[in-house]
Image (cartoon, rainbow, N blue to C red; front, side):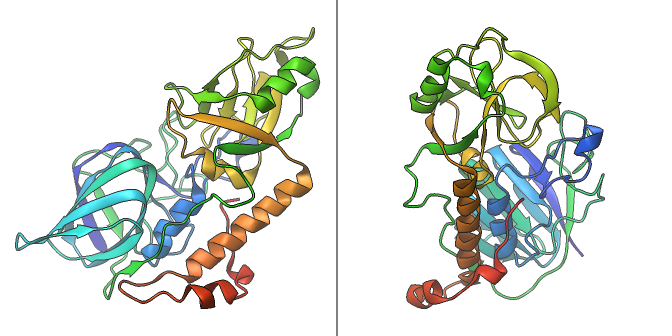
Length: 340
């Protein structure tokens, strides 16, 4: 096994995997990566299984020192680094790459925009809590004792030798949707809103609030008015992507750490294919919503899986030549994956 020591903790850095999928009936949130496919990409660059635990970096990136190596790290997102060797030599580490580190190496990472993900050879070796290694900060369990990364923490992963890997950035955007459009399915309580509110929701610009977190993304824009029955409902199931509208008329899009039930009327639910895209909107940025059907949502999910399978097949040893024509001609759907 290999071992790294946290020299600098960064800000908003937690252990995440694909989440707890079988305990929501007990009130346990899903948790897991805000963008599961970018975590899967980091793991692919580290040559680890795609659903293993890695680090999610939201605000500021950490610095890690190898106490016992060698090992491989995969960087996915707008994340770069400076690798300082035990002999004092330095070199740059690019994003969307997998790099092999040895005893005494220090990797100082820099985040341009979150979230980004760090994968580890073999995945982080931590105990599972309710079937997952994901950190749930509000209840203080999972990951590293239920908290964010701290200076002095030890991270354990599998040893790995050999060469590094690289790939072009994986992007959620495609030619079928305009940038900034988040697709949603209306309901289940659209009847609780006035006709004008339903129209405003679909045509307005919505700004991401600074008080957004892993539990919910708060949006600001025109006030959405409820009908005579009001904003409150008998509590029913809630899931990541659900768009609640409380009495103030400002939507809240639930995210990975959201509650399992809630009592505010929901005007719609973001489709699963766009939950990862949603993670990349920062406070102050604008988004719009686009209503789609269940069939369109299913097709979007399939398109995303196929796109990631093509990207995954293109991960290659660092410095290898790319044959994009051959890559896009392959039928790769059998290797598709998702964070669902």
